[in-house]
Each structure stands twice: as C-alpha cells, then as structure tokens.
Amino acid sequence: MNASAAPTPVEADVLVIGSGPVGCTFARKLVDAGKSVLMIDAGAQLSRRYGEHLKNSYLFQKNIDLFVAVIKGNLLPLSTATSREPVLTLDPSAFSYDPDEYAGFSMRNQNPEQRVHVNLPAAAATYAVGGMATHWTCAVPRFHPEVERQYGGQGYPIDDKEMDRLYDEAESLLARSTSVFTSSARHLLIKRVLQRAGEEFAEVTELPLAVSDRADSARTSAVTWSAADTVLGELADPVHTPSRGSFALLPEHQCVHLEITGSGKHQKVQYAMVRNLRDVREEILLRADTYVVACGAVPTPQLLFNSGVTLPALGRYLTEQPMSFCQVVLQQEHMDGIEEILRTASGGGDATAEAAADRVARYRAAQLKRLRSGDRCADPVPFPPGERDPNLALLVSDRRPWHCQIHRDAFTYGAVPPNVDPRLIVDLRWFGISRPHPENRVTFSRALRDTFDMPQPTFHFCLDEAERKETDRMNEHMLRTASALGGFMPGSEPVFLTPGLPLHIAGTTRMGTNPLDSVVDEYSKVWNIDNLYLGGNGLHPFGNASNPTLTSVATALHAADTIVKGHPGH
Image (spheres, rainbow, N blue to C red):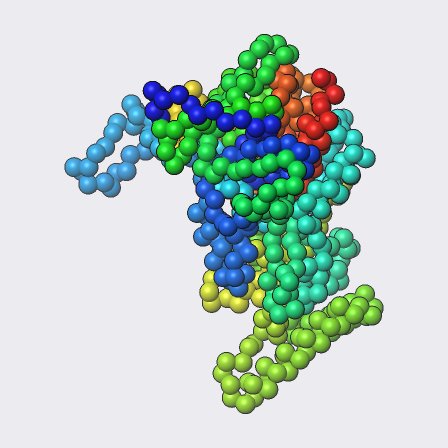
C-alpha cells in the first residue's frame, strides 16, 4: 500500500462486508427501509448480475459433472498442515532443509502451526461476489426445533414463534420449492422404491431447495438455481436504481481492520480500513453508522480478531458435520419395473406418477423398436433424457438426528465417469451433527499470514465418543438405504469424507445470552459494540445436521429488522 497517501474516505448508512446470501439479506432489507448500503467483497464478480449461481449455465445444466471443476477452482483451503518430512527423492543438488530446524513453508495457507489430527483439512472459503452460493447445493431445510435449536437444556435465543415467521420470509427470499422435481420419473421411482423398502423410509420426502422452474421449462429440464442475486432481487442488476435507499457493491475490496473505540460495554466501530485488491496501494476508509460482517464462519472471526475483539467465545464452540457418502447404481429390477412401480404406488390414482409411467413406457417402446430395426444407437436406459434429477431427503428427527440427501449434484468428489450413464446414479449424502465444546475452535496466528494477508487460521477439532458412536449409527442407516436402491458405483463405495468437506462450520461467532460463551446477542449484535452486527453460519450455537443457509438468512432478517427499528438495549 502507498503509505504516503491518505486513505480515500467513503460514507454510507450501513457497510456490509461479504456478499453471500446472508450479506445480501441485510442489504435487501435495509435498502427497502430507505438506508444507503455499501457492500464490499474480497472476491471478484463472476457473473453479469451480482452473485448468480454459476450452475445456471447451459453447459452445466446439460452435464452437471463438469461443474465439479468450477467448485474446486473457487474453494480456497483454510489450513493445510505442512509436512516436516523432506522429499528424499529430490535431485541431490536441489534445495533441501534440516527438518529438525525447519517446520515447513507457510505459503498458500500451508500452516506449520496446524496439527494434522485436529485439522479440518477440507475446510475452505469461496472468494467471489455471491460467496459460496455461486456453487452451493441450494438445500434449504429448516432446523429441527428440538434437535438443532435446543441443546443441553438451552433453547435458541430467538423464540420458536418468531423463528417460524423468519423462516417463512427467508424461504420467500430464496425462492424455496419442493415441487420442481416431483414430476420426474427418476425422482418418483426412487421415492416409491424407498417407501416400499420399510417403515424407516416412510418419511422420505422432497428435499427443500432454493430453485425455480425456468420460463422455458416446457421444452427443457433446466432449472434456475437461487443464489445471492435471488436474495438481492432488482439490486442484483448493477445498473438498477432502487426506489428507496441506495445500494452499491465493490468487488475485490477487502476489509482488513475495523477501528473500534471506547471501552467496556460502550464500544463502537469508527471506520473500516479496506484495500483495493486490484491496486493494493489504495487504502479506502469506509465510515458508516452500522457495520455488518457476513463473510463466512472463519473469515468473520478472523476479521474481528484482527480488529482487536477479545470476547472469550470468539472462534470457540466450533461445530462441523461428520459426513458419509456413497453413490448407488440403480438395480436392474427397479429399472425393468419402473412402470409397474409408479402405477401401483400408494394404491394407484397418482396422476403425476401415472404420467411419468406413460412417458417411460413410450420411450422404452420407441427405443425397443429402434433396436429391433438394427439401430445400434438405441437408448438402453428407459428414462427419457429430459427427466430431471432426483432430489429427496430424510429430514432430521428426534430419533434420527442426521440429515439425509438422496439426489444428484456436483461436489468436489463423486463425479460420474464418462462411461457410466448418470441417469442410473443416485448420490447418498448423510450429514451428522457435532455439539458445541469450547475446546473445538479456530485460532488465528500472530506470526503467520494467509493468502489474503490476514492472520492464518488454525483448527483444533475432534468428535467426542458419543458423537463418533452416533456417526457410526448414521452410516449404518445410509448402508440400509443404499441396499434398497442398488449396488455401489466403483470408486464411490461408502466412505466418511475428509473433515471440513461439508463446508458447514458453525459456532465460531455463536449467538447466545451471555458474552462469556457467545459472541452476539439474539439480534446478532456483537456484545459491547453498539454498531457491529454479524451474519452467517458461525452464529448457530448448538450444532446442526441440516444445511445451515436458510437459518442463517432467517437470523439475518431478525438482525436487519433490529437495525431498522433500533436495538432494544439502546
């Protein structure tokens, strides 16, 4: 940075740091209330509208497995334990080091302070306008009121009636739907097979998703996946002028420090120091009446740490979901009997299932006719190519405290090889739950810097004995589900995934009623700092098996209402 030049001052009513769905929830609500809102993000703008889902591209709608490379390219690992072992097969003349004197290099978030066995090696952040919602799965279940919004005799700081209202509004903002995939023959077949497999699958239902039909849905299987732009609405158009308030977004602008003054219970953010990542010589001093930090469950406490916030719970009580995964190839008998399974489901009379059975029967007959005529290109799979993917779930219950997704989507793992027909593949993703323990935490180094020149995060996380046993019980349930559907695809047999891979870290800025064991109050305001609010998954205090985004948006709505009306304590 150019130390000789004075920082450029910029002012707004509200500064929002982070442009994911949560930050955009704050922006949308506050602009609607007449506020001037400035949003910044360290990441680049990757789409025409702010924060679109990159999976809406035609190419990825036609071949979802190609999207895996996009996800991988947008994830920055947060802490990689550096190996102390020298590479013995190097050319003897190459540079080498004494491992007794050197702990390893610390570039690209390689972290000599990270102990391997307590790391979350797959934990990562996305730096882009729209954040991780540029490539998320769009699953938006509500937290279970007893399992995920209560723990250890404590309830959620926001009462159940208010949470239900907030959930309704959050679902509207994200365009939640459970109907977009329900007419698909693939979806219906898997649902019916599971329902017939036993009582433990009777609760199989549609996976709540932030998704909508496209205007041309009568001619295509493509859909529109929701993301940050969905939440922003008209504000996502860079040239749009809102009827109330004002909105501006600065991509590739990183907040490195919040200047906080005062002491005790009466502190206040005076300004945010921001650097322009397109020209790091340029410092910008942003002043606002209110500051909102919503840049991820690790970058948010990282910024607070770098700003001198010393609340004892900051970074502690970290939770992350243990997760098991497999891919199933549908059994031959299910494929041979699709029409019969769909027509006899629930005693018949289901018009949607009947229509799906008719489509399959017509397609099967047409392909058989081609085959008998000597056409070697006849399709051996009876699903018409335009049938949408399955999207089903077994939601968290008090007797099954894990979240089950039975679907097809792109992740950094589980891509289907080109010689396997993806219409036959079903992904099973089972998300467990870990509970808040103060020793599970992320800390920030005073010596090492990360890729963005901020204090390097280091994880200290492990499951306790009860959580490990429950995770084993969860995996057994996944195996029973898989056996009802088919056999495992080679290379995607059941496995527990690398810790951190769900990308659902929570608890690091947890919400609570006491500044000794939480970072924000029920209104998402940081304890003792009058004008600083937080948003994101880090606020969830009790651990969760369900996908956290919907609840994060709901708590952001609660906080935005508080900013507009004034905090009750002021």
